Length: 150
Ligand code: HEC
Image (tube, rainbow, N blue to C red; front, side, top):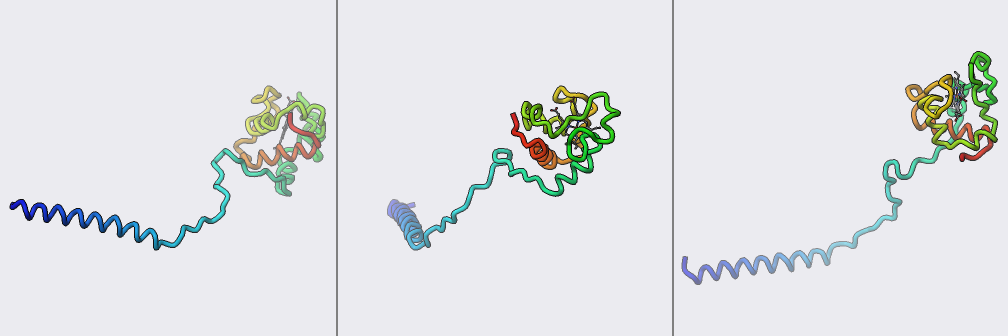
């Protein structure tokens, strides 16, 4: 190939690249400014837990699954209470419940009394109730005792 045509091709390439670059920069100048919508960033899973709200459904769940032992008002005087070797916890008794964390309640409800060093006659509800329902129940018990977690 003659040298002159090689330089022509080279020059042509440079021309193409140059117009390509300027073409791009021109385009970006005419592009409408990016609209930045104000938004709260999506919560990372597990990082910011949903706020737990005690609803009528939570109370119903308690009445359905817990009152046989813990009593309708959570006083530990359910109809089954007297048949248990260890008395069901009185969920109104702030003095004791304040010495326990919400995590301990959660574990006790999900995995049973044994999981937190308590009696096995507190059954495990992990196969019956969802984690979010259990979180609600923990909050409900805090309502019943009018006490804070440790
Ligand atoms: C078969 C009877 C029975 C049922 C039903 C029952 N519990 Fe219990 N629960 C117990 C007993 C007994 C204890 C006390 C265990 C101990 O003190 O060693 C207890 C203790 C607890 C504790 C306290 C654990 C601690 O840290 O001392 C929580 C919280 C609790 N129950 C929640 C519930 C919830 C919520 C339900 C319903 C989903 C429920 N229980 C259903 C018998 C029961």
